[in-house]
Length: 518
Image: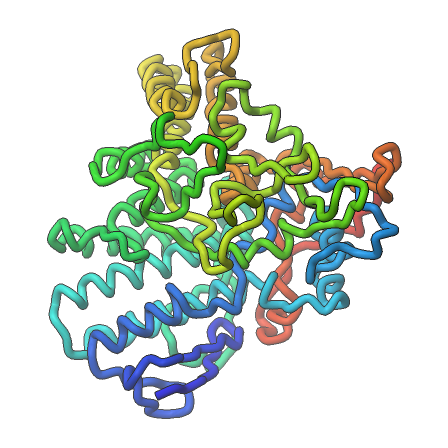
């Protein structure tokens, strides 16, 4: 059976498509399903939340708006970029223009490639459907427990994701506007207002803590498998991240330790990195991976465009890794060559890494290859940052010692000579502020091109970022654009099409049109 049904969630028309799901749902009315078995609901979660909604991108351009990306001088005589996303669209995103969605629409860019709001709620809808019907279907108790744990964990993840895109940072004002909470799959008879950031975080924590309890009630072999499904370690790592964003250092530390002590994962060591090629870290062949997600096709339109430069022999990368990021690595840091992909025809590094590449090429592999993952290394970084922040807030040297030890475990697996002060960038312990900054820099090195940087900048106080845009192919001719300290564009606008569907939504503040600083 194959059905396509539209259901309104939070005033948003979210498309549900039950492609090839067999007889998993029988329609009771135009907007309601009546599932019969736990296997039916498992298919709902699989196709609508894990694999479904692939038409909506959820990781399109976070690197492009952070300080980890730059652009190369564009040879304008070559007409246009070799990309479905035009130059004007990339410029609008890269320079944080408040009307960037209108520019994308004028360029005939599909909203599915940038509407992360709709993508997130489409996935939440699948979770809600499972949770609505789970206790009324037939099936083994253990399977129902596992399915509820997965649905709660995934719903928490997507709400956490949405509130950190469209809500203001928790540390700035937790009582500011977040995103609407809709916790059932039924159609709402009225439009739905935005909840506060605090309320969304409370729901995220409630779902994650419930998921943790459910997973812990299962046999250990059912708590995590290499089956691309969320798990107990995923829940605990996400809890560590959520508490870190909330500046609840004790709980961030507690849950990071749970992941580190799990025993099913280990850090890549120096000998694990390939020679002469870049590592692919987002699949289960990497011993750090807890959960892989996101597809390469979701970001390549914005972060992998080419320009033709015949003098260099053909296609050259247009969006590149920033020099600021590149020079953050020491000469003996393995990550400088492993995490930053070398462009084939220029000295620049591509604005992606740690993904599968085509053989003998710097191009991304299959579009269905995973592009992101939850990894063990984040647990070490969360733990070290929490320890450093506890040192800063308490002045207790035991936290400083612990933070240095924790980050040292990660560094000894990434640096050729981690104790060589002449070659390596060292962890600065001369003050609490310097220690925190050192660990933040280590986080940037380790998690580059995995979307962490944009969210980290938000919680670091939203610092000023400057982007250079070249006016042609002459490096001497350029414009400069700034995202100011605590700029309102650190919270992305809700897409206009979404606003039209829900009259109760309040749009985020918009900055004036950004002009060059020069």
